[in-house]
Amino acid sequence: MFFDKSGRSCSEDVAYYYRQETDTADYYRDFYVSNGRMYFQGKIATADAQDESRNVYSGLCYWYYKNGNPRQVRNFNSTGIETGASRYYYESGKLYREIDFENGKIKDNSFVEYNEDGSKNKIFEENFNNNSNEWDLYMSDKSSAAISGGELEIISTSKAGTSRYINYPIESSDFTIEAVMGFSAPKDMDKIGIIYGFKDWQNYNYFAITKKAIYVGSFYEGVKSADVEAMYCSAINPLQNNVIKVLTTGGKTYFSVNGEIQYKDDASRLFGNNLGFVLSGDARIKVDKLIVKEMHVSARGASPSSPGDANVKATGSGAIFSNSGYIITNHHVVDNSTQFVIEMNGANGSKANYNAEVVIKDKDNDLAILKIKDPAFTPLPKIEYAFKENGLLDVGSTVFTIGYPYALSGMGKEAKFTDGKVSSKTGYNGEINSFQSSIPVQPGNSGGPVFNSNGQLVGVINASLREADNVAYAIKLNYIKNLIELLSDKVDLPSDNSMSNLTLEEKIKILTQYVVLIKVK
Image 1: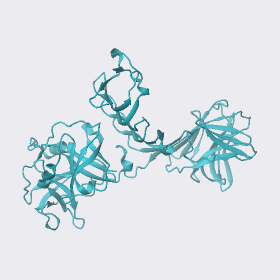
Image 2: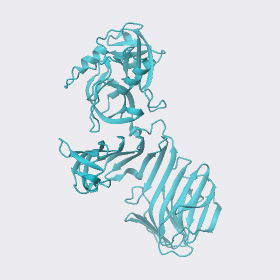
Image 3: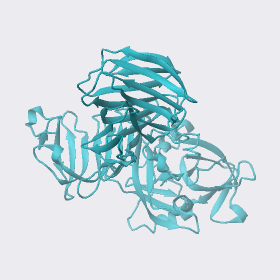
Image 4: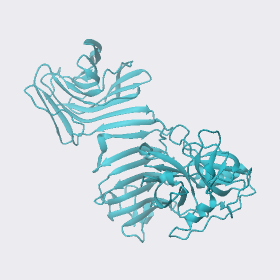
């Protein structure tokens, strides 16, 4: 079955991608015609053979760019309604947007957008498809307001005019406020516009238009400052909706109508957290859309390059030991949670995120095994490192770890290497299930693999002694092997010793592929 770029059925010679059914009922994979790479994979409860836009998707569905990077990861309920977190990516693989859906609608009308440099934008988009933002829809003898057909209509019947606004704090000094609004049977002096930074009627900013002119100014402690008063504007169309926009950036504020800048001034302060619409006496306004975009909002430690980090409660490290996606980590990393996302290192510095589940725990030895269970995950090639044949370690031997300390709290999500020496064959208070080393570790290193100088796995980091410098404890290899033997699947332990003669730098490059960041939700 072949489809063109718009998702419509077509002949093979002009096809953009083709569909391939799988052995799983209702689960499909689509592939690009040009290079055979995956275009889509996921469950389609009702697949339309003629037009993809009529498909009813179900569960997690994945779309990809031609280079193999993810394009969209979206979640649907059994009836095809988008729900939960959906993620959209740049072709480079970096995260573009994170949107939470509730019953097919954007939750709280707001979502997060990222620039490719990692800076974060917060976007609020009001389409007036409900009144979740609690606009005042009261009716009186002087005014009324109603939401219908995706529009907010405000009517003033008194000379004083009226307004409607909501509370929306703007945190960034760089922001835009954009409204799509139109007159209804306007008179020459009817004014409609935006009020923002509104504290009360003594303190606010405004940008308004009539059929032919614009008005810009503010009130501070009741004193009016009119920057622009009835300045002619040819961009206004009194018979259609107009896009009115306030852009504040770099200490300047720009006022535009239908994409044409009309006035520029130094940025004024925001007196309060309310914004909305105002109109003069005996006038009527219809608002089709309101968009607020805050640029370069601080991510406060959460990296925008990976999806779902805003909901992560804790992080740890782990090591993949089978090509089917089994991961060894600490029990205390996964305890008290059932939802985990594994972030893996891909080729050329790319990242991939997969859902995972705990399959077995060993609380006494602080070990746990996760397995990646995600339709986007494909089995890995041969694991290119080895478990040490026995768990014996000599005091003074060199060991090192690779892990993710403070991954979402300042140190970033690049895997970190630290090394040291075996200090003791026993752990804290002489515990025989662990050994002590001088490897410097921090929170987030928990569950990270410990390797010897040959690049063989010899243990898993599980604790440090904060009262002393460079004292770290690791669970011994034999306890890890014992837990793996309890898996219901037969798993062959990694046994590739080909890296033993490589330089340390080359070993680290190979091993980093198998060290994962565990995000606990």
